[in-house]
Image (cartoon, rainbow, N blue to C red; front, side, top):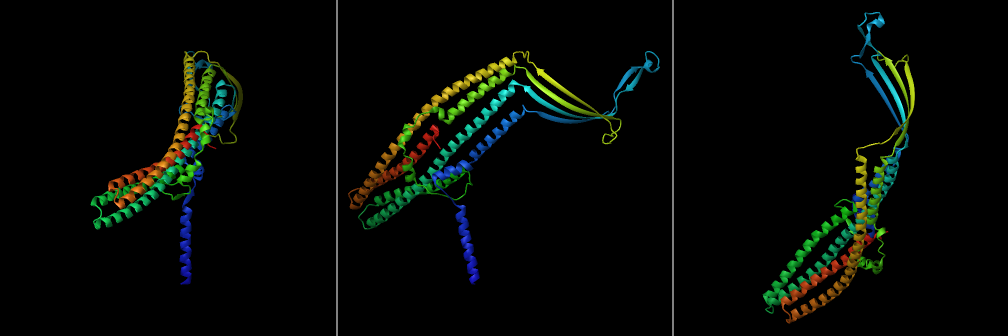
Length: 446
């Protein structure tokens, strides 16, 4: 019996330990760090960089020696014949004799070494591969910024839902107590039925909000899981709360941050796009320049009427050849000219896009700073309004039980309080998210 109890106790401990291991806990910064490693978009961005590195080497390799080998086997199903004047073999003049040249079967083995000596498009390709890798790195940086912002938003929505549920639970408890007391007063004939009904309506509305917020919390957790890159239904716990995060995210010095547009990721992307268009123009121009290539090959040929090529007695005839070829573009019916003009047009468009991006970024930075400043001011305002609404509701509740205020007055004060509570929570979340937006556009994230 004792051994059974020990076994059951050990089993329970292992189950509890396992469930605790399955639950992950995150502060906001831990969630951001985790997502940057495990978010699916972030992982694909890393793969894009690796792909760009391979593409760069692929481009480099085209200018290095290329060795190719080939083996050809030929068999005449009906051997080709040639007509030879019969008089060469003692025949009558004007007549022809059918002669088959060569053997019925042949094998040819060839190895060729090729090397580019000069090709303008290859030089441009090397530069383009470097720019393409830089674009992939820019894309990764932008993805990380977006993932960070998405985590902050998702994390904030979860803790907003949690705080809302706590407040709604307190409101329901207070309302239920007020309703119970009002029912007793009504039963004693000291209060009207309307007062009870008003409180019942208010309580019903708050319970409905509670149920809806509970559902939203579950969805918010799932959205956070997706953003983190973990399974949708994984249990996680959040260690930060809304008030502490709000205090940490009020950084007034951020409003004075330098508006250095050239450091922003969107400007870097637009700038690299312009560089890539410049390289495409160089590529089109390089197609009018002669190219020079060299090659060396070695060939072994075997001939036989029967398939005896694997025998030692088979005779193989070897040969080798070195050559240099130059390709000189002369006339393309204005095709190259049209391609060059098209590349010039695309370059002009890229320059305009860069200027437009610069102007848009200046506007976005100014707007993000304004929104962040407003969120801080609004937070302070909503905090004061909540304090006022709590005092007003408390006074009206005292007046209601003293018979000075009506149930309608109490309900209006309660509704004002509940609205102020939600506004205050939203104002705290806005401080966090607006700061994230400003940091994203300024590219100030470490």
